[in-house]
Amino acid sequence: MEIISFEEAYDIVLRNVLETGTESVSFIESLGRILAEDIASDMDMPPFNKSTVDGFACRKEDLGHDLEILETIAAGMQPSKEISDKQCSRIMTGAPLPEGADLVFMVEDSVILPSGKVSYNGSFTKENIAYKGEDIKQGDLVLRKGKLIKPQDVAVMASVGFTSVRVSRKPLVAVISSGDELVEPFIKPGVSQIRNSNAYQLLAQLLRAGALGKYYGIAKDDKEATYQLVKQAIAECDIVLLTGGVSMGDFDFIPAVLERAGVKILFSRINIQPGKPTTFGIHPNAFVFGLPGNPVSTFTQFELLVRPLICKMMGYDLKPFSVNIPMKVSFSRRLADRQAFIPVIITSDGLVSPVEYHGSAHISSLSLADGIISLESGKKSIEKGEIVNVRQI
Image 1: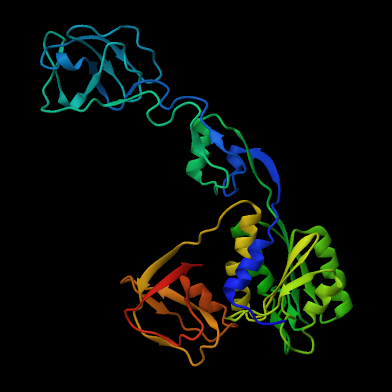
Image 2: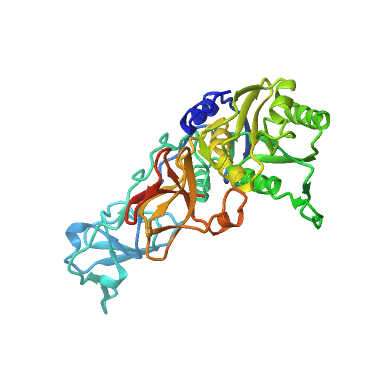
């Protein structure tokens, strides 16, 4: 199968998306979920004309006169008296405006006279009134389908009485690591062994992406055992992620196992670094990724290909945060035959500098990085001061 560009791989992955379906949850449990329905307001906001300050509600035309104070209106209290000629009511922030009033002047701009009346001694005043429906009118759309729900959105739901919300179902994603050299993190590695970091990195990335991760353990370098594990994962999950066993070594048999399991492989090599041997296929029950064994490759390809797929399955158009910033130093690479993704930091002076990076096995480099930058195929260097796009990771 021929090698393809990253753009082609991205297009293939997102072209084959199926939605996950929906479920209803309490609005207080909806944080981080993807909204699966439009939400409209059931009332005007504010629901009545109200004061935005502590002060005195009166008629504009009476500002130059001593005003009789009729009553005090607290928030949550209904006014009982209408404002008429040379009258006012003391009013608190958020309280309903009394009939007849069209202005509220602040306590700071008032003087209480010996007669018990009040006068305005300011030089200028706003109306200090929030009018009924000026923020939202009944029936207005307040949240749109496909939105990632944030804390402020929960407040919006509360304000319009939307206490049960329909959200996209979280896809269930299988994680399988491959290789006889792997041991779990709680085991001290022996000779020729390494701890399995990929699986737990992926489980954390899945959590951040809004998916449910299910760990199936380490598949040993045995075709039959790996096939049985893959077959089970495909039957149970929406997406299957395998790490390792997808390059060109004698024990890299994952593509053959996937085909035996009924997976139609759509690509198996991408012209990128890191992550060239990334494999993607579809099965009637699941999407399947064969990710490289090196942890930086696994992390990067998850963010570039898997996470967008997960989001689109939930009806969310992922737009990763990125910013254009000048390079602090020059950067060059020896070979430029592939598109490269380089981990970088944003320095205290607001510039970009590559982190120390020894290749796709150097996972600690990503812990230092603020983001990644891309060098197109054929581009060997970036000059100091050149503007680069930093994608947050």
